[in-house]
Length: 199
Ligand code: GTP
Ligand code: MG
Image (cartoon, rainbow, N blue to C red; front, side, top):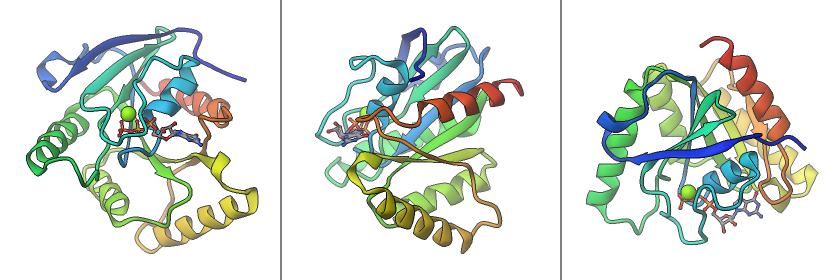
């Protein structure tokens, strides 16, 4: 099993002025609230307490920077789409998250997390469209694959791909992960290592 050898919390922000210097390649993790972002980050870092996880949605409310292996930044972003968050709070998060994604010069790729159990959701598809419009590279990362049988997973991934082909000529890379069973780390680290070469 592959993990980060070293993972350190750097800083939490809502103010883009105070982000770390963009001197290392950076990867942002985003997705619906409760999709398993923080859990996946902890799995990659083999540290259960690094990013705060919770069964209550809306736990991550800041842009959180982690330094991995002294080589790259991993960023935990607030989840979107949690209906109980007050609208003005949601707007504020959405604003600073989108500003961050649009302006961060060292951002190599966004990991868009999708719960593998669900059918394609408009909010995720709209977010991909927005990423495309803003020319922000992204990959899709299915989470919680331990919750499905392998045949059901295959079926869901296929259905998701078909949906994407309705609006995309090429599909992004797709990762399948489980923070519970520690599945997917090798593929993600391999991808990051390759992509870092372009920094
Ligand atoms: P917010 O920060 O609130 O937006 O949520 P998040 O996307 O960071 O999700 P978080 O990692 O806090 O996980 C949400 C819930 O899903 C927790 O109860 C986790 O234990 C559970 N969970 C996360 N990943 C997995 C997984 O791979 N398998 C299973 N079975 N449960 C998971
Ligand atoms: Mg979180």
